[in-house]
Amino acid sequence: MQRVVVIGISGSGKSVFSQRLGEKLHIPVIHLDAYFHTAGWKKVTKTDWDKQIESFIRQKTWILDGNYKRTLDVRIKAADIVIYLEIPKWLAFYRIIKRRMTNRSIKRPDLPVYLNEQISLTLIRKTLFYSKKEMFAIINKHKTSQHIIVLKGTKSINTFLNK
Image 1 (tube, rainbow, N blue to C red):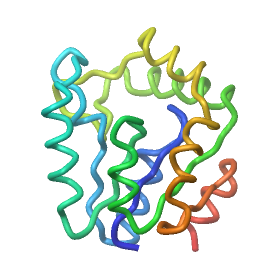
Image 2: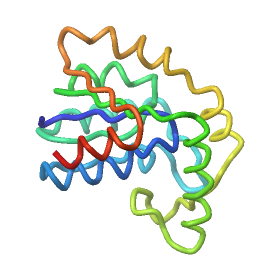
Image 3: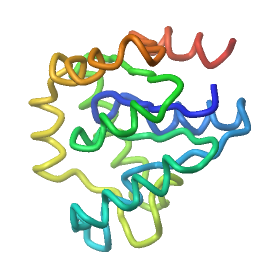
Image 4: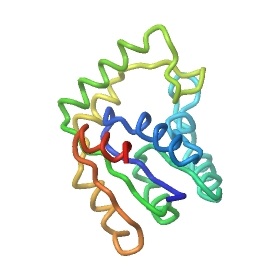
């Protein structure tokens, strides 16, 4: 396990999971949110994003944390393993709100200093209309070449990390 893609609904725990996995495997973790947004949560251009993704996947080892469907195919093709964190939407919303309340006065470790934790209409929409079916349509195109692990629920996620 040298190149890992971690995906799942917002609030599923991708960043925390990736950080813990990276510590266990001694592999660098790349939180894609930190690179997809500039100050004020503005998106980078598609060209700059594609160049950034290419620079990440050229590295020997990595854990890439984040969905970003448009470049998911590229990341999955470069990965050894894809880990999908599956939790119910109600739990995802609870975690998003809890994360916002918890990080009001401190910086989230997976975000650069110029990004503040926030709950935006875009985040709410992305979470509300998140399509597991759509994500699996992308993942399943690569089933024969990549190992895919689906971790359902917090207990399954923690069990995996504790092995």
